[in-house]
Image 1 (cartoon, rainbow over the protein chains, first blue to last red):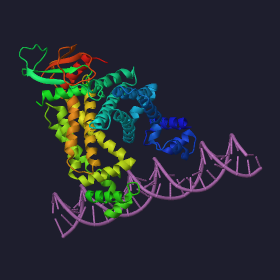
Image 2 (tube, rainbow over the protein chains, first blue to last red; image 1 turned 90 degrees about the vertical axis):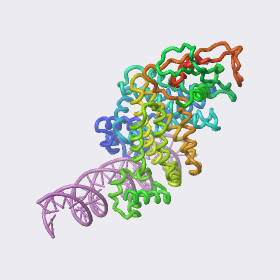
Image 3 (tube, protein in one colour; image 1 turned 30 degrees about the vertical axis):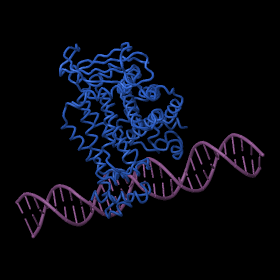
Image 4 (cartoon, helix red, strand yellow; image 1 turned 135 degrees about the vertical axis):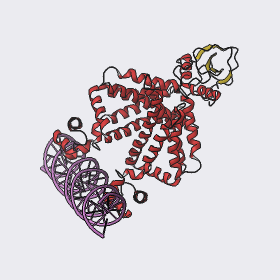
Length: 240
Length: 240
DNA sequence: TTACAGAGGGTACTGAGTGCCATAGTCTCT
DNA sequence: AGAGACTATGGCACTCAGTACCCTCTGTAA
């Protein structure tokens, strides 16, 4: 019944547009009572995203069982669950994408869905990073990065009409995030890297316009969390 | 008149709650006709965020005039415009924050507002990075990071009841993003950094449990975009 | 059979948002 | 001053999403 309603709704949305389709139209086509529609979908918008609840539950379950050693990897993999849901029905996903792009109400609704995914990811990271110091901050920023990267890859695929494998674009995008945020979970007291700026006259550095005669030399123990390394370099390079 | 309506609406929202206040209640208190309300606010939700349109315009203007040399710095500063709008009316901002937290409809509305800020920032970054290669991807991820960091600092201040200076928390949060994403705009052919893993026996590295006898030595020209540095280190450090 | 539960249907209501038109104030041109 | 035009506002009626309440039907257990 839920399925019947969702299909009737989606057909009508494609035919007449979302706003020009009333709930009465939907229940008329589905051959059920108006009251039943709201039993299965809390709002008209929900009929457009009938599978996100299940997907969110799946993500939550996945994260609960995730390995503790690599939280950034875990949330990246969790994001791929969403991707696979889209990839399972390419034509539906592409049609829905086009519909959503054109209806402000659906765009807003989608934002609230995406936000729930993001908060789920952030919650997982926060539980691993700890709420102390910048744990919560880093959790939220990384979750936002992962979601943005995932959505970038996903949209690329959706805009292409659902041709080819969406995983490649998303993997590439997530790799960029990974590259930057590394695996900042590190045991309690990670070895601090050291970086400093030294005169560069005799050093052979490949490439390069715009050098000013100095290079950065950074030494860090292998396994040092990437964010500590970056922090150190940044402070050594200074502002300008 | 717009101001009168917004104040009447906000008072009533605080007294009875958002959902238990009708537009008729608002216009009755404001002493104007119902039709006029919708002339000034396209929806009831808009009356809760009467200043975001102006702020968005201000941000757009700021970015249009921004220096080309440091796009990440520019979008960070642009985010601070929003912060200052909140900080200009601490008590109002805090009350609105509490209201928004409790009303799902307002939360969703706020998401759509935040999204517009994020897209404005991403658009600026994209125009600077170029749409080639990963330009669009990096623009979106950095914009999402900046927004997440900004919102983290802002919420921290709002939850504290609007005490003290919100800029310190936001500056700290944005610094974290800055630290990670550096200034990746770089001229066409930036000098490539070099990093490699070498045996570490004689090296004095401070700190440290968990070392395995190897350190990373990284050499880069000063001014190299941070993301190139990170990329290089990441590939040198490898996976495990 | 009765008692009960749960799925679905019907009706009437609230309230947001829109379209259309009337009215009043203001500005301009002659 | 007065005609015409333009803008701001109010009022009215309408659509439609969403909800509360109550009904019927069907299957199941005692």
